[in-house]
Image (cartoon, rainbow, N blue to C red; front, side, top):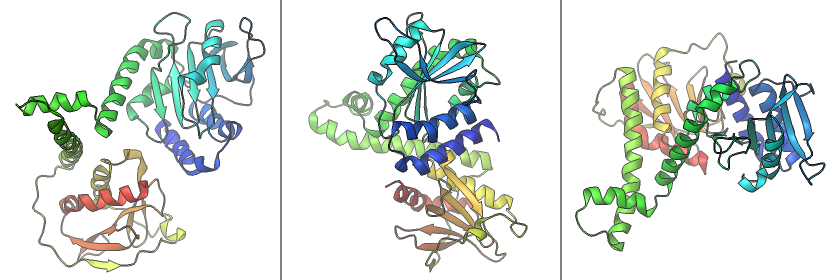
Length: 364
């Protein structure tokens, strides 16, 4: 499997099992050890590579332990401290990492709850761990731009000099991106004022702030949606389209497909048209979730588009097998499928709202 696929597989495991993981030890066994072995490529059962419960006495602190130390050539290179998956990470959790970072040769420290991995180094002062991470990997919301940097920490590649040299840029770009994302979700007064004063000439009163809070929020979301759709249209060579005249949709009660129907076999022929339709639905759905969460499974009678590769989370179905008429199947809150006839792939865009609504249902 490719590195990105390994990450996606572990992300799926975390997503499906996190509700059952309630302790720190369970988090280590179910999530962190697979991350060290499958993603970073180190043998967790070889003490020459991975030392669990690593101890290095620090001053008056005797016998304290860090959960894992990753070794290379007999030297500590990466320290990992774990917390249970049900607990959000805070800098207070990293106290032992701070102390151990100063007395070992490690240049990378990792604080994780099995879902989020915060990577630290010593950009601000030599041999002193920074208070803010230079890289944050959220397995349930993977930033694909970070994947090449993460690969530099794997056993086969391990390019510490390269990742340290890129750490400062990664640190600030990551913080800026998270700040922008936070403003899109819950805009602060400064963000609202910034845009309002550029389009509104009156005084920025409380009433104006309340009015433009909603407007700025809607505008930013619409802008993102437009960017996603425009990029996909360009990639497919599409152009602006006029939706076909509405035709009475065909309503059917949707039942989860049998597993053998969803397994690929010689009777299933995935077409380029189905894959292009999937890319359009995926681009629309990406206004609500990360792209890697939108997957597909081809069946004998339809092409399913799912959230989290879960048959109980249908987003849409493409019924392209008939030579006479193609349909896109859309789902309501009760998972009842309504088939809408379409003449071209462009007409999928006219169902954008229903596609996004289907994703939102599974998010609640």
